[in-house]
Length: 228
Image (cartoon, rainbow, N blue to C red; front, side):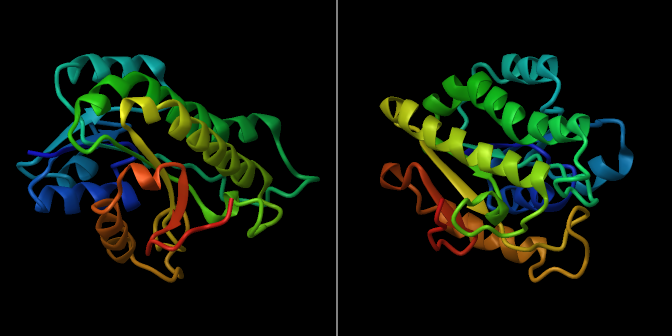
């Protein structure tokens, strides 16, 4: 039975990934920040889903879950945990402390997850790492100009994804970035173009086709290539 570990699974895209993979019969390990939040756990109730307390900014929690799953192969690691300040982030209104909060989640959290679970992913049959990025992290597209902390943290995520793709190639691991599109989540609001179900359903279909030849690529939710 295939297995997936998903960060940021308490809401939005992460929760939808958990639901869809569980419905497909996968063993799902859902990382949530608060195991005691009843509404979150209730929405993830499924015989295929196991919830783990996992805040990617807390290294001790990452190591604890890694130890718990030390003997379990993981076919797919989805680094989905995301954070946005939700306010103007223009050049003259950037706060260094808040800026670092976004880097802690998108960059350092993702890197810590990859480091902690690389052996389990190596042991999996699919050997996939999927990092959920954003078109705002593309230096070519220049979308969302002005949201400096968010955009630069996603650009940094893209860069480490390229590096990981090269470094982990010898292990047979495929590393891919996705931009999920403009999705109606708690972070982006209700007026977006896609529902979480639509975005995740499309990404799951593409993920199912990924192999070593796609490692180091940046893809839209529908499989189109995104320029770095």
